[in-house]
Image 1 (tube, rainbow, N blue to C red):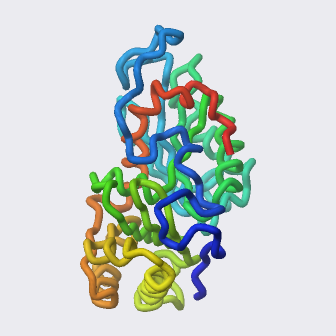
Image 2 (cartoon, rainbow, N blue to C red):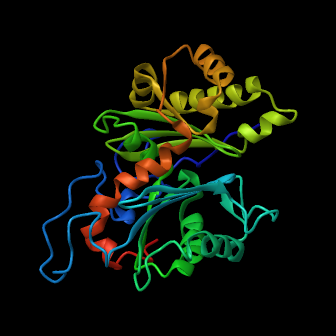
Length: 304
């Protein structure tokens, strides 16, 4: 399986300065690059804001649309949904290999799951995780589907960064995140909290039930990391690998995969606690800063 990655750009591979073409710039999400800083100074134009999560006019939720599972975190209530990603029981999956292939179907699924669970007469703020390499196309499709909830703003965060936040990782240091999902595996290098290099392969844990073995999945991950190290003109990738890659996703719950991958990399791995819910928990941590951030009041709802 050939890893998918971005073509070379004007910035050196692994360079922490700027976001290579195709990567979602952290500034576009409305969040500070370095991590979930505290709320900005109160805006006198919005006097109704109360401390998160007690501001009833500002229903906030985090959303992780996975190929196999959809997870929803509501501020003040925690994880309220962890269900199969299907338009309705027995239907086809509207999200495959990390891509939204059926926008209307995704919207119907969200309406079925959340239409009666959110407070009436509110416009929720939604923080949405997004695969790193799907870029603006994924974010636009996701925002279109989420409109069924009547949000006042939809902010996106790279899944790898959400994982790092859930793990309380030090974002001031280079960090390698390996996300072993159900149908997609991404390897992402973060520097100062921003994405500066990434690879992915259309393999995941659901493929292990067929002809693909744990060895095949691990080989794909090792190949992606080796490519990142070779093309990195700095030492960021190597330093991050030496410190130990964060391991998240359903694959991090499989001892055979973790053991084989650690041996193949000859480097430490740091599985995130409850790795299958790391992305949604990380997105939930951003709700506090997003609650009163200017982009959370609708100005960045359609930012690219």
